[in-house]
Image (cartoon, rainbow, N blue to C red):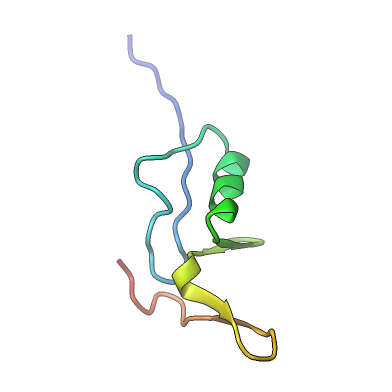
Length: 71
């Protein structure tokens, strides 16, 4: 018998990297929670790895140009 099961991970909307190829989660919220712990920025429908976002000297959020370095 074949069974189907879905798992979730997070992909950066800027560079295209996947949070962790070896760690998939049973729920979307579980995946989001884990990547936040690892420094990812999660916005409503976008996700950014730690290398694709930062704050400038005035505490303004800076995000690299999306899909600039698609992996």
